[in-house]
Length: 507
Image (cartoon, rainbow, N blue to C red):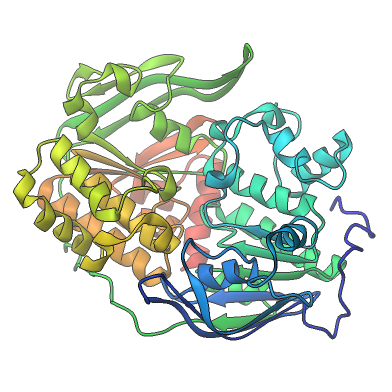
């Protein structure tokens, strides 16, 4: 580890004191809806506290209350919050900023959306760091398992994978040398090996530097391994729509999408950093393709390139035998409709100024999927199909939990009635029950409508059960591809063999 023994002297509390104490906290939205109901939480220095419960139960709201950063219009109706002897919900703005700048750090569930897209990684860290020296910045990058010698520090956040963005957010939090560290789903979207490394880092911070650490988490294995204390916010909730998966997978038809010799890079001030190298793949009509590999292996960039959000440096993408333009601007509206992406960060596709209903209505009308008079009913059908109640049509993205936003983003993509749906870690922010429900929904859509699915996921068991073919990536290259069952039972490449072992060990 790269931390010095005296790295976190400021703001320490005695080990037998609570760094954070929450009692009977109730938070309500402006319309009176309860976002959190009577929650209790205690966080001590040197201990890791996990906040668990299903999507929408209030985990994020609880952590944001501790950070004094409630959603717009939301307020405390009952209970107390004490952080290092102060109440963040009643502090004057200047004192709250000082608390968050020097003694408390919060990393949200979508860290990429909170990072300035115009700033390079090095500047993002130096902006908040106690020590802005080059060696200190390198140490922070190394600590969160980000490379220091491949130019990553000089890249902007848009040039990083979702997992890399998450680690930059964590590095920014550590750069402040806080006494309290709050993390909302810190390992969502990370491959198992990196998830375990981040867990080891959090354990180290608590044990060696006596940080008070709290995290929300959907992963019961991670909670069991990492947490000293667990707060369960489970409560009655609407059960997601769970569709019985078909007894047989649909038979893939002819090739819908063909990719040949695809290369991609990120370019900054004339310096090119290759990300994809000579990628070939095909997606059959009604087929299910899984794309797996470690964080930073190029999976997200590949999906963005296929839908036209990132310009390739070489290679072709063809749809039903027609070569597509390199970017979305060079494609027809019909071609764009047929290829839809559900990104890892749902805030990236949901306009914060539009209600969820308006966000779903727009692609319905834009792509002519229904008449204007039919749009309200179609919006409700889309919400129901992803397990969201009708009332969510009138809510804004910030009023939803991370898991609820992810389901809304899936509904928005489905509103265009696509032929190929690209899903980038769509279950990473969901609890196990909802993740299975969403995957069963996608499998049902694939069977009933002949929808082709391209699924990027670190949950290898979901990939193994719901795809026909598999592409394994490492360092921007396809190292092995073929039928999913064969690759998991008889892998030929060491990377695939390691992934297959994780599936077996995971049960």
